[in-house]
Image: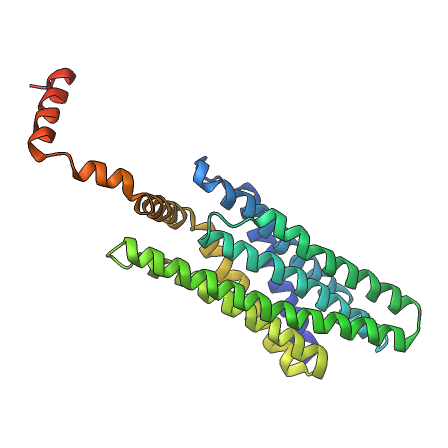
Length: 276
């Protein structure tokens, strides 16, 4: 019964993630300069969605044929996919709230240990040396746990700073439009935590919970992400206002201009424009 439920959830997840991945690649986005990073991040998210779609398709097709020995490879696959997803989603979410975030540079720095641990794990699995595999696998697991902790501190620090800045420059609670980003990160963190618990405990209940939560996460994030450009443009306005506030010299010059002079300048501008 649990196997049938797991395979059914895998098929459902494949359909959702594959469809949203196509949307990320092919749906049009306004060609604004301020949306350049958003458009770039859509490609990364499409990769994340296609990766999890492929993983779910393989699960649905081959799960019934797996032996007990093959489960170690499944655990390694879950760990590798989870680590890659943590990287892609965390940095994409940060990019959505901090338009000055250097995404590409940090992404390649973080990819190196993921690739290294994955290759070591695969070599250890096929070496048939249990001790070698355990050392490689649990070293990878410890790195992944540290990755989740580090990403959590980084995300909430940047998120809280962004919310504070948005609230400072807007009186109509614009920061409420960013709450879905925080919700998405929390859901992603829950998925990552359940992945760790499943790898350690191997409980079927945890596996099903893991599947249900990550289907909810991928659906929620995908829909919100596709509707994000309007909020992204609002963040750009906040950044511009912040820069203007940080250059008081220009503002002082404007304040020193008498109102009478402004009135004269306005009248001249109207006459030059030919208004009646």
